[in-house]
Length: 152
Image (cartoon, rainbow, N blue to C red; front, side):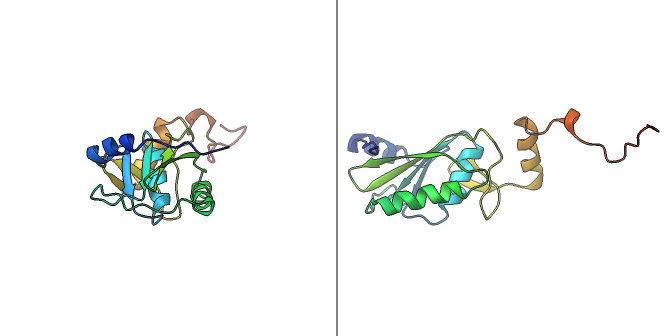
């Protein structure tokens, strides 16, 4: 299966718009897991590899090894994050991260959430709020350790 190739014009529009809630630019793979987790815990988004923070195309050599490393990073998140890849002719690789269906996601460094153009580490209370709002926790299914049968 071939990876889809995008148009340079599409990339120019994205670069002009800049980073935001759904777009992150990265020169390389450093801290990529944090960005994937942040997008999966929010509403999804795209990481554009080969672009610096000033919206300038640096470009990179897109190889099968690079694509495999990206897939490994996504699989090593907990729970794993499904991603898809799209190449641009200018040596830019888009990593498309959908909103997670099994939130919250975490990487080795913890839990993160996309907030505007930033990736922010979540506090304990924020993690609990995600668990409660996504329906991952059901009060009526929890075990009450203090319950004593038949006395109670």
